[in-house]
Amino acid sequence: MTFDDDFIQLNTEQGVKRLLCKPAGVQWPPPETINYAGFIYERVRYSQITDEQRAELTMLMRGAEYNCIGITDQAGSAHYN
Image 1 (cartoon, rainbow, N blue to C red):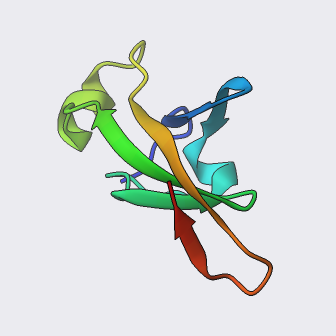
Image 2: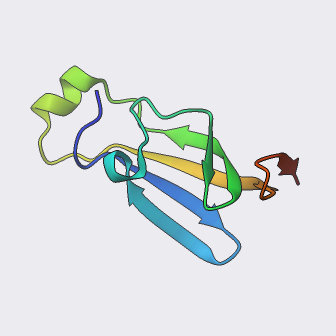
Image 3: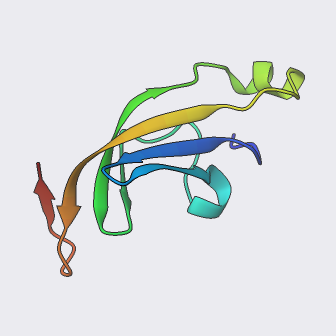
């Protein structure tokens, strides 16, 4: 189950970008890799809080951290670093 405040953090060469999962189209638990804005990101770590625990802990936000590992070309093919 994806809560409204679950988020992903994308680490890029330009800095950190944080996005809420629902508007970004990411379901919880977060996937191993994400394609976003022409870049491929690999999950480094994520919150291990269960849906049941999260439902009880209303002041808690779950997050997943990703590092950029490559780019996609206009045809959608992947190119890894």
